[in-house]
Length: 552
Ligand code: ARG
Image 1 (cartoon, rainbow, N blue to C red):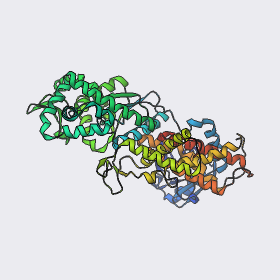
Image 2 (image 1 turned 120 degrees about the vertical axis):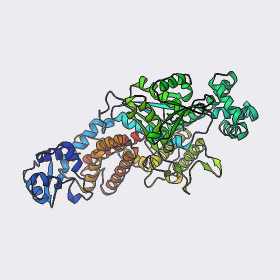
Image 3 (image 1 turned 135 degrees about the vertical axis):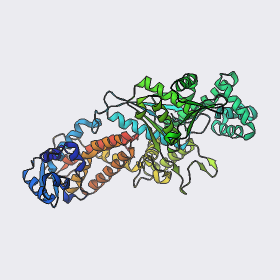
Image 4 (image 1 turned 90 degrees about the horizontal axis):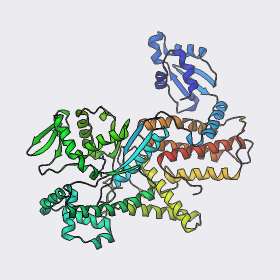
């Protein structure tokens, strides 16, 4: 929001926040850059909104505006284009990577529980969403000066390991396991999951929880193999974590937690199992300990949350997890609250929807087979390579790295442009297209700007004689970035940044096609626009976790 508008409107007696709420940004530029509706003032001023608008326009301070006019019940503000251009371009070129950032999170820590795949299972498509969205939210929060702690909380504990161990004991051997581990482990699980082995599986998990040697050895082997596979995926995605944690680390804290629940009068016995009754809250019953003494996902999550609060003193803890776990997180936060932890209100389930295939079905299998993340990534990289080969002849290493980056841009942007809470179609062919609302289109626009900038020297002293329509639209968009960051952060919504980046690139391409830059009379001014555009797009891509490249 332009400070000059707020200043100008102070004479209404409204507060800054009230003005910000009321002010509109007309889509049609003939109504100005900002429009202020006078309806709400009618009550206090006891005049018609039309009269109020006319009266205010006479008295308003018009400094910084080309024009301020009353049209019906509205006051329309037209910013002084030259002043605006001068201010914004200089600001961007001065602040560079920091343009759009702010210090609202200074001294505060945000914990982000993200990615969190399950050991001995394929890295799921839902975990990919969590990785991409969690990573972007972390970048956005860091841009607001928060300290973020990205925690990968591996699903490495639970009754499924009893099933895995049974499957392995009955059908498995290490040699085959090492050959094609992920698919093999999946098979072992399917075998061990059969009804006839239910009791044996339960016994094995019990043994694992009690520290049995053989159970522990097998579990460690599954974990080590899985981690190797996950790490290769993270490397390709270019995502890193601050902490690698996992459910297994909390096994030893279960007793203490159960005692605490008991002391606080929350535990009830039910057929030999321990539960917390949340029926009053409309959340059913949370199972804390099974009849056989085994603990559950939620039991561990309770201990984890308390531990993280002690360790990080977070101002907020975000769980970037699919919406199918809604009930789990509602139960978790409610129990923490009942335990007297006031910080429970600072825990948020940042849910995401599903990936769907073209037929609208859950995207997790293809031709009946589980889709493996490695395969998707490889396929995307191959698609990117064939696109690059159409335009450039590159040496192997460079080709690989450029293709990887384009693949990341395709997948990350393909995901992040959708509001995270909605289901979305995972359509690689569309994601990777160089045209339309895609990641590669953004990289391409950036490369176009950079190649122009490479050819010339940019001077800081540009004179603006006039600002035409395309320049004006692009500069306006550049000036919006800081506000977009604030709202994306507040709403935990990377899609706002994604939309912004796309709009910005479109405005740049319109400008590029209608305004000659190099060799024109306006060269210095227009180069400053190009330079600022490249900077802001790069900042936006950075917030999405998308790496940039010099050439496409
Ligand atoms: N491993 C779990 C899953 O794949 C996600 C864990 C999310 N984080 C948590 N603290 N519960 O479903």
